[in-house]
Image 1 (cartoon, rainbow, N blue to C red):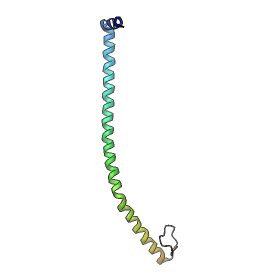
Image 2: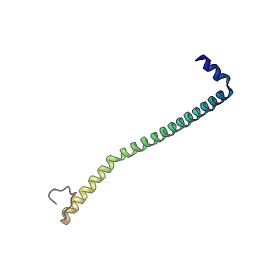
Image 3: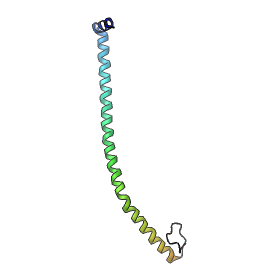
Image 4: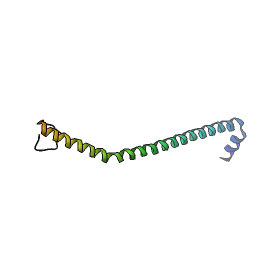
Amino acid sequence: MACCLQVAESCPQLRSMLAVQQQGAEARADAHWQEVQHKRGQLATLREQVQELEAKIPALEAQLREVQVRRAHMCTEQGEAWAGCLNSQCC
């Protein structure tokens, strides 16, 4: 094995090929790391967006219930049948 290393180290073509391969490997590793960093940034942004949206859910659910109740009362007053009616005496 030591003999092979001596031959490889003494051959300019092999050293050159090794240098090209190492540069390519470093470039690929750098590009991969940049992609990882980019995706981490995207992940942080998406997590913030999810938190913001989840924080809005209770208020939106309350609004929905209000609208359903108002619609149910309108349904009762107008004598209409509505599938989403919350007033069991109505529809």
